[in-house]
Length: 389
Image 1: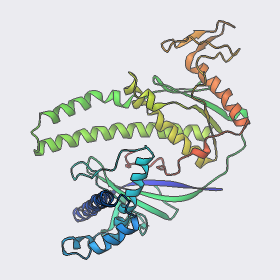
Image 2: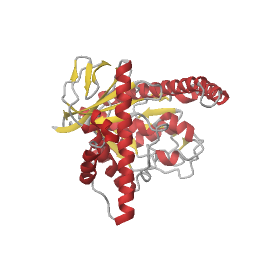
Image 3: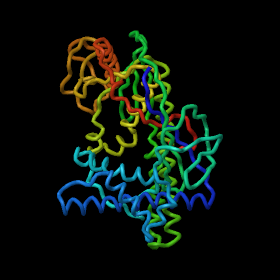
Image 4: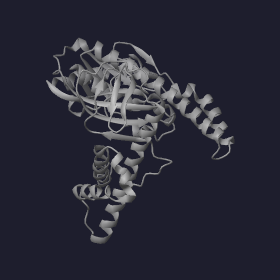
């Protein structure tokens, strides 16, 4: 048995007074972040050395005693300490070239959120927030594991959510027979074509709602800047976006859960979604959410003790004849069906790719190469209504 992280996300139903308290806590987190970033930059310009998190924590303790910032005593201490620990992590991502240089957080642009690593309790359908109190939840499923940390955030529509991180045991990967291995060929017209012949058409969530979204955005552009009607129009745009996200997430959760439960091993391609998102098919690629499909399949396979096999990015799954192995190097993207010049077999492009990837998956399984070591542990539990899936 291995230990993995699991995340439950529920919508909160705070009172008006509790909403004010949550906003105050999130505002304090933003203020401490900006204060710590300014201190680090000033210290580096003066001494050419970095300021440690321990020094910032000591300065913050002294800052709470000042008359101008005594209001920080009304904010949870772990929340403020977490903001200090997030800053070195942001610099580490910057030096690793995984993110931009840390910036000051604007009150207008920054999303209200904060994280408390401990002391958050769940009882019944309520969650305890330090310095705020017990808040009701729309809890759709029990949380049997003890809570490790909790993140509170407000979405663009104005609703508050809590994300609870827990640790749970995952089973070891099971023994696999060739009959229980399936290959999934990802695409845009059909989001997934399985090697057993199953075809799942793409939901096209964004394409379907594109006209409604365009109309809502035009309404925003006609409203006066800073007016209440403009704020209401922006809320409507946010609700349209939220509906698109929920539809897409619901489709992907149901699909990946069905695949993981039905097969002992899955084989997929190592697609460069970032590269595909820079082509003329970018809108369709992002609407299909191919990267999110792989992410969900990865952690669900790990939870269920199943194997996830990832074929090499340059494996010619579509251009290779699964009957004789001949390679059709000149196959253009527009040809969805082709005939092998060597053996005369007629192929459906996606179906042929699925069969080739299934054979490649069996080969990878024989040499013991899986993607389980790259599985993401902090993942949202599927099937949680009202959680912005």
